[in-house]
Length: 372
Image (cartoon, rainbow, N blue to C red; front, side):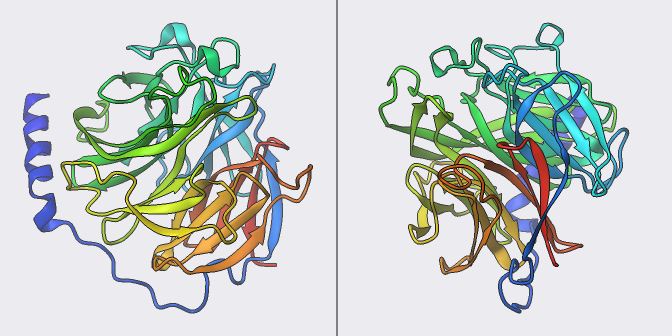
């Protein structure tokens, strides 16, 4: 392990000088411009009845039980609809075949995960098919019992191999990942710093952590190298319906800018030099606020660094340019009152097939926004 760690440290040290980012794609209108059809692919409810799908990630390579082109989804609630108690990950093919990738037994987790298991929107697939998912657990579905949780690392057959706890991880809410050689950076939002004690009042202590892992070796779980707080001061509070509200979706742009959905601030902010900075940028530079945004939650990056966000206050997706101009709006969920409120969380961009996958936790389904 020491040899591998040294190799990872060497790779990481040279990152600032060697990292390259793709040139911007030629713009031909907004990414979602031709996408006008919403189609339900499948239910995300597994055999144990877990509901409230949150995390959504597109599988890029086939490894073990993971199949390229499938979508992995994490469930936040159990069958009794208690938040912060979901233990399952399901894998859905674009044609609607659903398999259970993992059901995590809190008693069998090989490491610390304070509070237990409640799988969040924080979900990524690393090289070799290592799956990392966040846990923000409760004992009874209420914010009063929420605890710090952890990041769970599963192998490509759905077995939990290790946990990452502490080091600033406190209510991991969403996440994106970027791999550079033998290292992977996880960019994780955290929403429990002083939140439960505030009993519903807003506290400005939400953070973004860069969790750097050594990812060498197909049969060895990634090794934690370091954690760095690169964002701080985000507004957060507990909520009787959403459990907790705070900084949610994150996505990394081609120039190493991390975009953050600041839900309570109703804005998207940007943190520069996300992979290399050694200090906090605070809440970052404001990219866009207001307009069609309505409590942005999930966030994903489309070609040309277009920022796709989904609203908590309605059923809309907003497509925003990196310069802050809101380019397009698409309605993904029009049910409920108010329409679409609280239904949308995770989303994933399929660049190859020009589609956007998203979960709807009002209907417990995986859906796709695509061409007619």
